[in-house]
Image 1 (cartoon, helix red, strand yellow):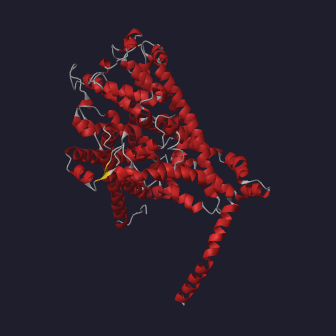
Image 2: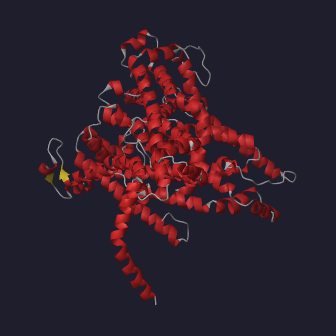
Image 3: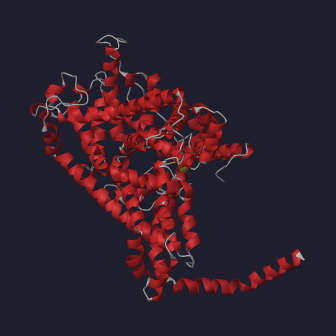
Length: 324
Length: 310
């Protein structure tokens, strides 16, 4: 019975194919105004989003900008082999993973805690004020943010001034924080928290707003205190949001960001600040070694995709909501 | 939606039986959040105070959130620099042109893919959505822009980011939410697609278009990497953010901000690198601060819709 229907439908589609194509073109002509409105942007899409993918071929060449494509020398995976034997690239890889790992943990923990605290506020007005203030730095550019972070951490900046006033250091012993390589990851993490903490709470607050108030009442009846209610009602209520964001962010582990590192790096902290994106920029744009830079970029994209699949799979195994 | 946007929980816990522990928690919570606001705002207010203080006086230190010797000479000096004045114009120009073109083009494509009977609807949607997952990377994009002949031109600020997938989906879902009868009525009256788009869809979509315009304005104003990559050799196309970036880069190369300034007439004008940096920082963030009330309202809404859809 089933196979009967199947054969019938398949014969039908093969019968209709020519007319289907005809119908398609007929409709296309009928809808020529819509075509006119959208096709120029398809051309744009191709030129600016798909055509650049061609550039990946340079990773397998010894690319010389002056030569045409047919004249380029093909070297197979040589660029990749070089990368993995390069001490600098290994350091860059370590920095990338460390920076994004620290940012991930710090960003998650602080945003969830702030969202919990905001959710516990009884006054709507005060909550609005806190939200307005903490969202603000998100709209500043990283250039502005980096300038502000540099000024705060400078020898005459507020951190040093406070440390002197509290007697933690003597006057004249001011610390040049951005000159201490080992501190760079922490500074980057805290700077990112300063910029995006408030902003990151939005999603959690929205998820908390959907929790049924009856759950809180029931918990209160059972004698649960504030912390118990946070732990047993609020957190489980936003669990799925946390998992989805966690998957997204694990997929982004190789994307530790570019602007903040580039703007805060200096000669002293370069061993800890340089990540893959800066490596790509330095080799590609400054030294015109396009092939090596593209290879590093491709490696990054590849690992990102693999990480995304792994994270998604783990979420699936744990019976959680997932992306795909 | 209002509830979602502000994240106000619709719960009403009875106030009467608030225990002592509850009250201590509330108080500590408020104190902590006040501290957090201070930490968030202080660096910015300090920069503002430094920019409004006479530069020679700031050297003595001790400026916190209030200027001691109020003066506008830092701002006067900054805008007297022809580079910075010109960079401000370019920044404004890319914000205005970028926002208008992005809004217009995104709306147009969104309208075509909102038409369920459109034969190319699926193809266009997939072609756009795929770009969110496939990123060629910095160098391939650079080589492509070079080959397209866009280096050293103003249009490199506009073309590459013209239509974003997020904006497209945002507008499309708004159009999907409009009552069909209005769109139908236009068609029955014999209005062509362009007429329908311009006189019916665009006006009805104003709220979502405002959101997209704000998204784009922030992106355009805050960008500096494209200036650095494509137009760094042409000072005429420099923007405020890039000029500020150059100042920061100069001063971070040396340990002390005071020794880094190379401009000879800075000393004659009684400004210091510290003051110039602070002033530039404020100038580079003023439009965002002015737009902030709108930004907060529309951005949060956009975030929520995007989050739900995405």
